[in-house]
Amino acid sequence: GESVGLHLPTLSVQEGDNSIINCAYSNSASDYFIWYKQESGKGPQFIIDIRSNMDKRQGQRVTVLLNKTVKHLSLQIAATQPGDSAVYFCAESYTNAGKSTFGDGTTLTVKP
Amino acid sequence: DAGVTQSPTHLIKTRGQQVTLRCSPISGHKSVSWYQQVLGQGPQFIFQYYEKEERGRGNFPDRFSARQFPNYSSELNVNALLLGDSALYLCASRWGGGSQDPQHFGDGTRLSIL
Image 1 (cartoon, chains in turn purple, blue):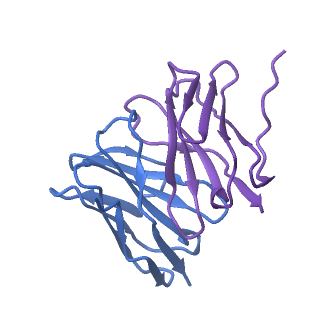
Image 2: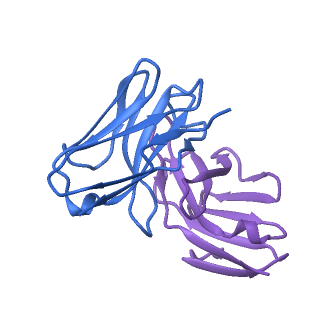
Image 3: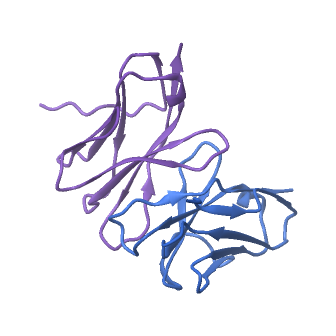
């Protein structure tokens, strides 16, 4: 069967490695998902989004994967850099809801 | 272009007092949402306003209120402050009233209750 990536509150990677951050969402009606990066003392910064009619979307060095069957979202960061060190949150919402529901964050630490 | 701006950046109040936080959205954005972020947790939704009308409300007591002005800026008011209201209050703006475009956040107001 399929394995669902485990959400980890912290993740430590070596500079240059790829990072994978996992998120489980709760509402099967959610149809829009966003990943945010939050650095210390700042607000969440938009990274990438995906709609429920897609299962993969790529940006610059980042890829988001969506598995609606198991309600799982992941963020892949290629060639992780020290500047990627931050807390990463996934957020879900559904059409006309207005609000976003945030998951538990993952603190990513990049070791030089 | 300026992002979402919030004022003040930091605020210290005592229990029982009232506070007003302010937010200016990104130019052209008509929707403003407020979130509370307690240390170590993700942001929790408080309110959304779109075209000056309340479009959504989270699970917060009536001590919390907000409004949106004709220029789309917004204020969040909290009455009868409690120690548990200490948090980072974030404002986010988006172009539309729905959920299919990303919200952009300000850097928040850090509220400390003594």
